[in-house]
Image 1: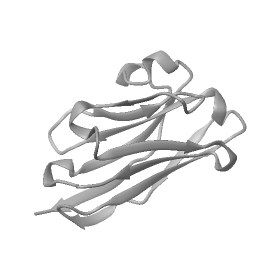
Image 2: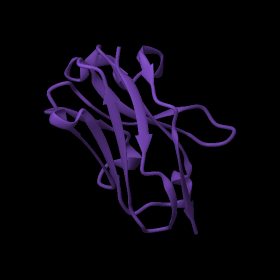
Image 3: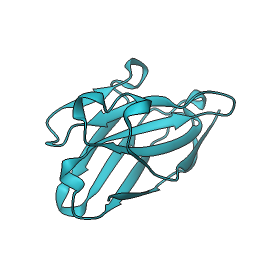
Image 4: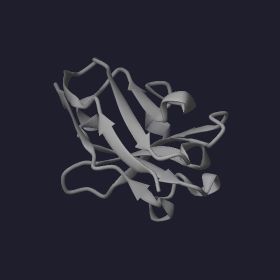
Length: 124
């Protein structure tokens, strides 16, 4: 089974950028559609972005389109989330997620594997 470890979070000023990485262990990385969710204090975990197994299809929440880009590198078993033009409301714990059901990768209850999360804090 795949295990996920996120990195790249931190503190950044509004308007800045961060690149999150999610390293997957195991041999079946390419079987999984990969996604990013986030959870702010007092709020539910919400979908951010996802990429299908082939890498050819990406999904984004409307508020992230044009600012965030998801990608994956099969050779490195890693998925990335490039975040630009960050806003204070982007502050949250960001979680990497995996599911073999590519059509359902945007649905929190269809996620099979979660990472431990990485904190992103955007100051105003």
